[in-house]
Length: 208
Image (cartoon, rainbow, N blue to C red):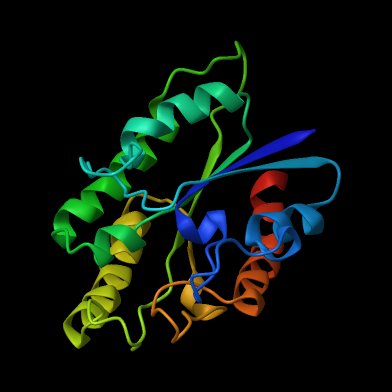
């Protein structure tokens, strides 16, 4: 059996844009991906609401620094064949400098490649970065036109930066859009669409 770790934020966890908690199990995109890949692949969803690429949120009830937590996740779930990083939305939402967010993505890619493997003889897992969809106008006063423009810039720069590193990138925006209810999260139909679109992408990487 092959194993896939999805390391993400509230979009991976399945936050509903109406503030009603979590999407149904069958609507969360990691579970849609699991269903599509079939029983020969284990998909492990590690989604933490508020998680950033590599930024500390000291007032938060949990450690939100993805770079600090990823090594433990890699060690806990080893051996892994594919690691899917789905982060960046919170870096944009909370206004961190884009260059810090981009460096955070790079650091996550480095951790996957260079972290010591728990299982002797196991291969280094492949990497896939799922970049978040764009922010959209909504009633939340925090989601300003300037913040929406920043989300566009982040996706543009992140795609180039990861591409320069030879890391495969999937653009959520091509298959799913944020809900106008809160400007950032996916409704049930869009989160399912993301999972369905990732099935052939993940399958191809696992078959390499």
